[in-house]
Each structure stands twice: as structure tokens, then as C-alpha cells.
Length: 240
Figure 1 (cartoon, rainbow, N blue to C red):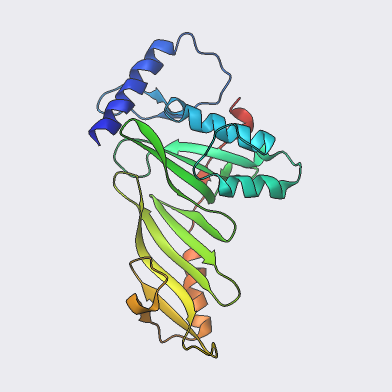
Figure 2 (cartoon, rainbow, N blue to C red):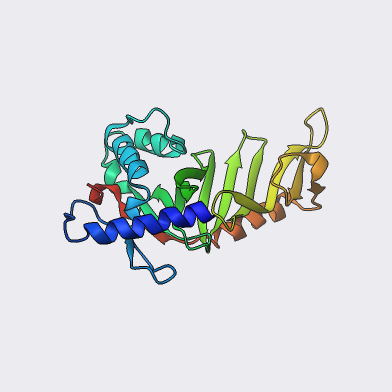
């Protein structure tokens, strides 16, 4: 954590020195003051990561050897089939973990510059940005606000998973709150059971079998979906 705050402090000083000479090439994300420091351009912390995502979205490829958390973005770009992906994918830089250090969120964007579907989240620790989590079409995350996310996944017609997670206090991982899934009750696959745990494991042995009807089980997912929230996003078309 000490390294993470030191890196953030360096960014504050760099941005202060550059503010008079910076052009207006990128739409910036101004972050609140931390420990009395001046406002900082949050894009500086994740500039290399944002550059790589911009290249990926604009060209359908990226020069970086390995861009963590890019699978959902790449899938979305390929599905758009030539549409303006830069205007439909956006980012936000905000402190969602509550430790005073901002995270980078990349997600799908609607026409009103907001969105719920989050492709990937990055944080910065020990002076180095790293991917906290990422999702894609059949294994995705939706914002619930306050650093919470709804996860929804599928392993085929028989297997479905959904649950809620919250980001850890240091922003480096997700902590499971509730995890629901379907699984066959026996070896002949004749009956599907509904299960729950708080460990985030797709495993019957560590889960409670729920005495619910199919309708009651899916009502839980529907209720969680109603709790999702949009967040403001900056389109990548405004990044360069």
C-alpha cells in the first residue's frame, strides 16, 4: 500500500509541473485531492494501459505483448463488425475501493456516456498497474455501485452461475458475497439442483443446496439485476 500511495504522489507532482504545457488531446479524468494534494489527471497513472486499449479498440489488435483483461474488449470489438467501437467502449478512473487510489474501469457505453457492463478493472500497487478482474460475454460483470459487481456466467444449457462481489480494500481482488449456481444432482443428469455459497466456488461439496423452485431461484438473479447501476464513462473516441 505504501508503494501504491508513493506512486500516486509522484503522479500528482508530475501533473502539476505539466499542467501549463499540456495540450487538449485527451479527455482527462480529474480525481479528488488526496491527503491535501492538488487534483491529478488520472489518465497519467494508467496512460500506457489506456494507450494499449485504444489501439486494441481502434485496430482490433494491440502492439503490447500481453494486455491483461483484454478478452472482453476484443470480443466486443469483433462483434461490432466495423461500427465505431471507439464511441461504444469507454473508461472511467475513480476510487471504487475506498483506499484513496483510483482504479481504471473499461466498459460498454451507451449513447448517454454511461454503462453497466464492465469488461475489466485495473488498480495500481507497488508502482505498477495490474488487472484486478476481467470478463467477457459468457462470464461477465455488471456494476452495482459502491465497488460492488454482479457476476453472471454460463457453462452451457445446464450450468448457470450468478452472484455478487465487492472489490477488496486495496483494489487488487474481488471478494465474494453470494454465489449461486446450478448443477446436476446425480450422475445420470436427470435432475438439476440449485446451490449457494459465499466462497465463490463452483463446487457442490462446499455449498448449500437450496430448497427452491426453478422460478424462485431465477427470481434471485432477476432481483440482483434490478440493483445494477450505470456509471459515467469517457468514450475512447475522446481519448486521442
